[in-house]
Length: 149
View 1 (cartoon, one colour):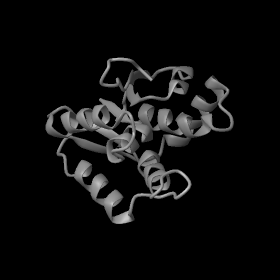
View 2: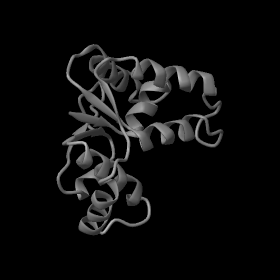
View 3: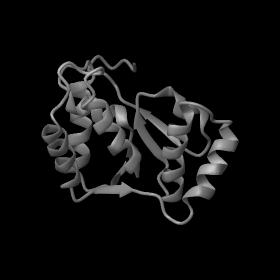
View 4: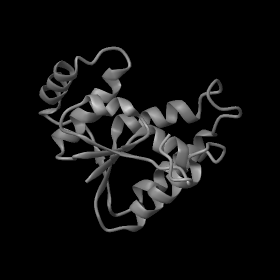
């Protein structure tokens, strides 16, 4: 199973981003496929923070537009939500220690911990920081030219 990072959600939603077409295509393939894929709960909340923020996008997404976008993903029968369970903090503390994660890496560490807790082995992202974490492989979103950004 693959988990979707925030940046892929943002690119898929915001048409003016360079990676929009590629992200939307990947998300569409996942939604239309039968293989399970996952949205980590922190990525969903971060998506809303980013796309509705007036300092990030001008104009920012209307909340109703962002909600509709996420609802369309959640409608896919193959979509799973990764939320913390009883073992989450043990995974989180281990990931933090093994990667010596601090500052901004703490957010990525929580995504990796959720993936570990739910048996997810791969994340779709454009964030190279995920390479710092053991036990998760990275699938980079490719641009239409085939070049990873």
